[in-house]
Image 1: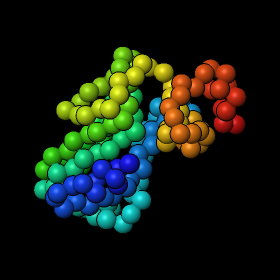
Image 2: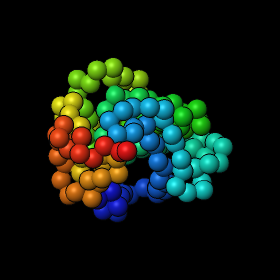
Image 3: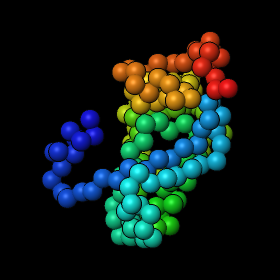
Image 4: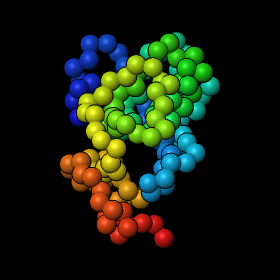
Length: 142
C-alpha cells in the first residue's frame, strides 16, 4: 500500500526501513532500533531532511517519542509520525512527539493481524483483530 501511495508522489523521496521493537508478548520494555539497510547507520544521515515515520500502531507513545527524538538529534529538518492505528486512553500514554497523523483511533485492546503480531504470530492475517485473553494464554512464549 505504501508503495502504491508513493508512486503518486511528485517530489523525490527515499525509503529506508528500520526495526523498532519494544514489546515481548504484551509487555513493553526497552526500545531496540536496528537498521534493515546500511544508510541508516551513518551519522547525521538525516541532517536537513524532512522525514515521515510510518508506523503500524501507536500504543503508549514511548516508541514514537524515542524515534522522533533520535531523528531530531540527527538534525532532521522535520519529523512527521504517521500511524495506521492510534490507541486512545492508554494508561501512561505520552504524546511527546508532536503532531502526527492517524488512520484509525482504537480502544486500548491488544490487536493482531495486518502486520501486527503477538510473539511472532498473526502478522500475516489480512484484517485486524482483538486478541482475546484465551489467545494470549494459548500463544505465550515459553
